Length: 113
Length: 112
Image (cartoon, rainbow over all chains, first blue to last red; front, side):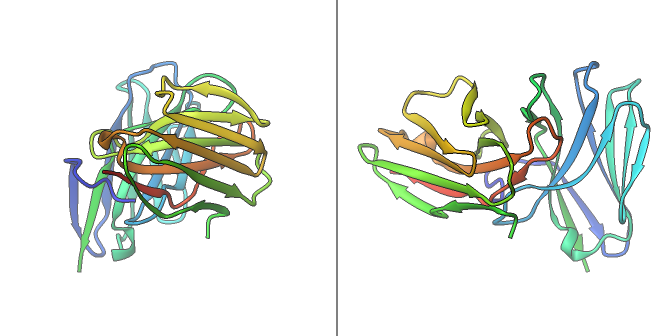
């Protein structure tokens, strides 16, 4: 499942540090955002979502922040672990009532021991 | 195990071959999707089926032909593909209108 050949931005962090992955979106009318994680050889996996009426949402070791003013989304991972190494995608749905998700290019997170 | 199973995991085919990718979901969802993930573009939506009816065809060439015989199964029939069609093809499912897609592990296609 790895995005072989894509020159993805890469974030390298030390194990135990906090990670921040950023995403910019263009549609100011978007009201829902999702973060996915894709490990090598696997399909994307849902991490956390946030609606536009919120600025922040927390999960287990992850926090998503939404800044609607500058159309920016971030995913914060606390105490990053080797198992967090993956490609992370932000996504937003187009209209339609079903999940026509549009994905960002992705960021590769590399966690070093 | 994500509840979405794709077969085969790897497929190599010539440009004149006809093959099919299969997806099966055991989650009781009523929407299913095909996405393409390649070296040039990370994740592109190809087709959406909702309640077994195709509701989205995202300008995909006719050499890709989807089929959804029931809410649990989705196929992607492949015919006279080009080398640039080599990619990872991901199937996903979701409850209709819900926010989360559940992806399979993908079928890695190589067209020679």
